[in-house]
Image 1 (cartoon, helix red, strand yellow):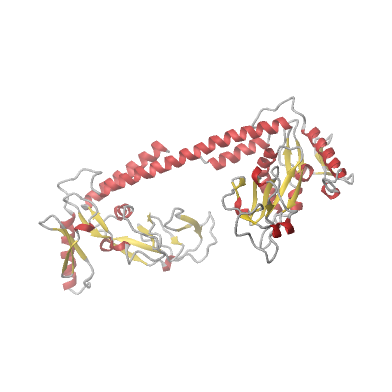
Image 2 (spheres, one colour; image 1 turned 60 degrees about the vertical axis):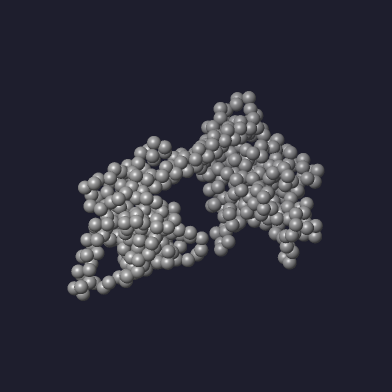
Length: 508
């Protein structure tokens, strides 16, 4: 599968290095563009559109005769900043700081004692939770009434602004949609208003690893980490000419469309692989995946022999009788019955499908034993990749980390781990520890069932797990699964895994 996220990051990195689109020799040099922006900002101060403080920290970054980068400050002082420059830019490009090409303003919280409006008003209030996928999701917007707006009316955004989240989720970047022009902004984000630099180009640059690393480095490491406005303003970014900016935006848009289609195709492919695997399991568990061998000892005969052996052990006083153990059989009327102690009950309505003559049905609790996970629960969640022992969960993540704890490691293998709340399960054949007490550790009655076959059979067991409760003892262990002859179980496992491998190699 293609890692589209990593690929997009690589495309973006090439873009800001000037390696994504051809350089236009007729494009205006970035130094000329930046000079024009400086003059524009000075004029805006004269016209009262900006304040003097908005330009007092502006700087000029240039290359000296020694080919090193220097920065000239408003007071005329010059400092070598070569150690800050991360990579060389093409001719016609230049380094600058955000303060030189944009203003950054904070948002404002709803005043103390005031709340959001109960109904939609003309004043939307944009929260961090609304900032998704480099835009603003308008589906669940909150609104404020006129009284609240009057108090925070100076903290609005314009349709040409960008946003940067500065608390909670730090460094999320996006554009303000046209329909949210003039709406209010949370105190946990800032608006960025650019002058002379393409808004979409700046949005891309701010998303880049180059800028995100600077944001991370500049974040105040306190109980509630926050990215300060002044630190945003001093962030270093590459700038190119206007036509190159547009060419980069167009190229990224085209690449994003392609990667989105790849994502959709991969999602469809993953669904197809999952569907095919489920069909293979259905065939396997119904006895339709491998040919039947008439010479295989029927599962019912094996069960009867094991019951007879247990009976001898009970008579000898070596084990106690399990009063709840069930015996499922097919009678002369072709219906299935279950015997528990001296009670016999027709369970034909519980049988999910027909199986071959040499197969039978059993309950999971009669072929699997469970162990509580308490001795194997990890004590510390200080996981590191270079530690030895994996810590497992039965969910999709499976291995959630590695621990250096040397005690309480499950080494009697293989087993099945079963999440008592979600009913997820995983087959495990390597030493491990578990995350929580929700894990049941299941082992097989080896004379009866191959534990890997039991695992595959469990994947097709249906169980309503909507309530937050423990399921193994109360429900899941009571579920019926088919039991083939022991020799056939191994053939079924081999066939399943060969087909799985073929599907993954063919479709991945």
